Structure formats: structure tokens, C-alpha cells
Length: 168
Image 1 (cartoon, helix red, strand yellow):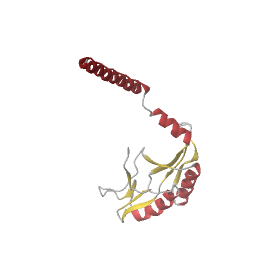
Image 2 (cartoon, one colour; image 1 turned 90 degrees about the horizontal axis):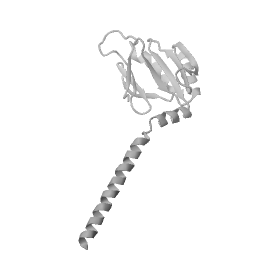
Image 3 (cartoon, one colour; image 1 turned 120 degrees about the vertical axis):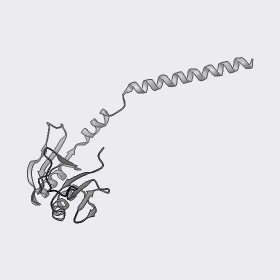
Image 4 (cartoon, one colour; image 1 turned 180 degrees about the vertical axis):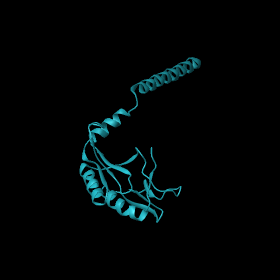
């Protein structure tokens, strides 16, 4: 659904020191840069931008907003949290399960040096399978499709029978 997310900071090169270390722990890297104005991170495409605010006003963290990054494992979540704290982040939730979010949710939260809340989250494979099943098409559509095919078969059979009768 999302193409990218941007956060505002007052000093992009300084913010890059933080995000280079923190996002590397999750396997993300700089993929585009327009220093000193903006830098983008991702796996291949720019998905997370760190930039000066477009309105040229002071940067401020969004109240109630945060950005969650996908982690490949619980260890990656732990590495993200450790790298963030080492790079100057404020702890907002140590790595661990979050059963109130989902039974298979494992995450960690920090605030970057500019006050932006960021998170690393890992869902176990079982959770991904459960989500895929919940998005599966309802069986009713398959039955409707089968009824349509049966009607089409009857129509074709009827045409063939009428054609044979005319030939007699």
C-alpha cells in the first residue's frame, strides 16, 4: 500500500550517521541521496526518506505517529534496538513479544535523536500464513464460477443438439 515514508530532521548528514547504523542492522541501506537535503533508504528502491522539512520550518516529530521497519528475525530486532541506543536513540520499548498486538509479534521501539518514533518488527512464519489465509477469496465466488461454467456447458450442449436435429 505505501510507496514511501518521509520524516523531517534538522540536520540530514548528522541524521544519516544514526540511520546508517540503525537500518543496516535490518539489512537496509542508502539507495538515494541529495545531500544536504535528503537521503533515502531501502533494499533497492527508496522507501524511507530522511530530509529537511519541505516548508523550511523547524523539524518536529509527529505526535502519535511512528514508522515500523520489517525485520527478518528476532535477532534483527534486537540488533536494531542495540544499534539505535548506541547511536543516540531513546528507548521506547525493549525487544520482546507484543501479544497485545498479535500472538506472533516481536518488536522494539526507539526515538531517534530528532524525536521520531521508529520500530523494528518481526512476524513469525505462522502469523504470515494466517494472514494469507484471511485474505483468501471466499468459496462462494468459486461456487458462482462453477454455476456459470455449468450454465455455459448446458448452453453449448443445447446448441450442439439443435444443430444435429437440423441436419436430420
